[in-house]
Figure (cartoon, rainbow, N blue to C red):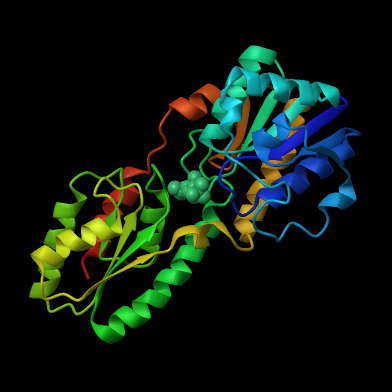
Length: 324
Ligand code: F6P
């Protein structure tokens, strides 16, 4: 293998740049030529492919976002789009591709491999941490630390005014961000898609708080919770406790930006190096992940079909510690 490409796709995640840097530097150390594909699958279709040398990735390890840009391409979902993408790769004699992204990225890569047999190795890059085959995804650690910083600030004002705050964090189908930030911020309630009946349990907790004359509370809600998000749940709770002054904060895309934490930089660096080694060794259609601190390759099929759910002990802990 002489020429490989790297791209980022789907929602950006802090640490993607550290991952691109690791791919370019590890591949260059092996004498490979690396090409950057810009704007994900859409850029692959449109032929936005440029050579990346070692110096092109200097001074990016600390930067959020992705220097390669990203996109969610509808065209790649069509056979015509994938044919154009294949032609672009062949025009640059690309023999293997490293894709950094989440579920949608690997679903696309899996179909593409079936049709064109171009080997892909993936790296998990999404703030949601919802990928099977790795304990943590690139960007998750930064996102939860950004959210915690915001929630701590909300705690100050909630305390001063005796208010009940509902804080919505990201996680389209997944409660990892909600669970970690909820436990880490000492929230009185955590509503995530992986827990059923969490509204009833929240109401019980709040009632106990009223009995103990608790003056303010923070409730963390994952955007993907079945209640419909923080605005909906705040309305329901207000009906039950009209005496509470309730407020809603949606942290939103703030969680996607910013300088990656050291953990995310290291994770991205390890996985970037592993992805290059894997590709050179002949791996294809797999994602490089870290499970129990060990490198593990998992097929794209498993990554996209198997559900990753938070450990039960963390879910239990969140209930026990909520009672303030
Ligand atoms: O997948 C990461 C994520 O940030 C989700 O948590 C969120 O629902 C989604 O992306 C938002 O996507 P977009 O930036 O396209 O609105």
